[in-house]
Length: 456
Ligand code: FCB
Image: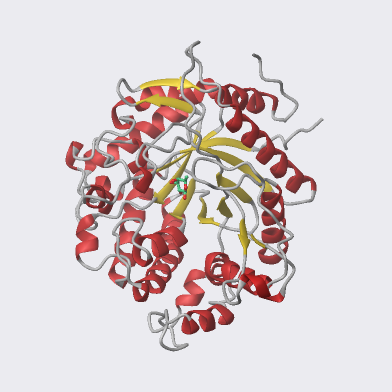
């Protein structure tokens, strides 16, 4: 029997800007994603989050979908500009009430809310004052965390401070693919640092407001595989792992910023000197505050090939990507998830781990029978849950799994062209159609195990 532990937390995940719409309802302020999406050329299909899945108005129907799925928990994010339209100061009660109603609806449906505070929609007013490269944004975040946890803390016990600091810093401020669209490496490391400091400062604030709080952070991690056993490819892996994974994990678990990566940044011209001038006294201890869990978003591995020597001088590739790739062009490779979980557990001992996102983009829509036969997502889901169970068998305290995503939604710079949902969304009518993967997930959750056949 391939069973999960009895208390395994089965869930689905979404984020505010990707599903809510209603971007000017009830006093919501502008976010950097509203501004970014309104800038020509930034979103590949020219779309934005103004309507998205209209979840702001249809949340009851979406809670019903989750009740039908049988999930035990729902990971969603709060839109900071709904709560504090200009980022700090006076709380917008109407905005906060939306989440309060949603939480009540979830609890009535027997679904535990799992709240992410920051999933990328910074109030534009804060960006106008400098955004994440400015330390003031960290203190504004703590005020926001305080307001949110004060209001919801009687009912919401599980809190994630930030979603994916790597994406926020590198994609937002380094290569400009995400809001606010800056291309300025000098802002990247300050952003990452202020995100981590604000996490460390928010944890005790949330704990003070919430009895029996469980607080953590979510990282997107990218396990690196060398394309060949050559020293150069191993070195490419070290670098990738350093900037992507260790730059965040090491400080969170008390080791400070990795020195080898500081050297890499100097070599690459991203840093002028080994002195990280944005670090203030006490920051590293603040960042390393003990947490209750680590959230991991896993989608794919990275196969690393050195760009430091000509291809002809490198050893022949021995590792090749699997032929299966999703619409994001991400390789489907589940064994990397087991290895990642095992590595985190043995190397950092973060305590309980949650997979806070895992999923795949395939455009499959309704067929002639009106159903959505998303076989590739079904296969992806099965193989990654298999990999998760394998990690548990090896002794990793994996406590839950959140499928990304409940609904097809606004996939950032790709607009609505990438569909990650287990539930299909017809954007013209807002009709929701559970895909085959949703039917499978429902059966898996019910069984709490993998020995489930999908009815034709
Ligand atoms: C992650 C994001 C999430 C979604 C998935 C596909 O990086 O956290 O919002 O876009 O990727």
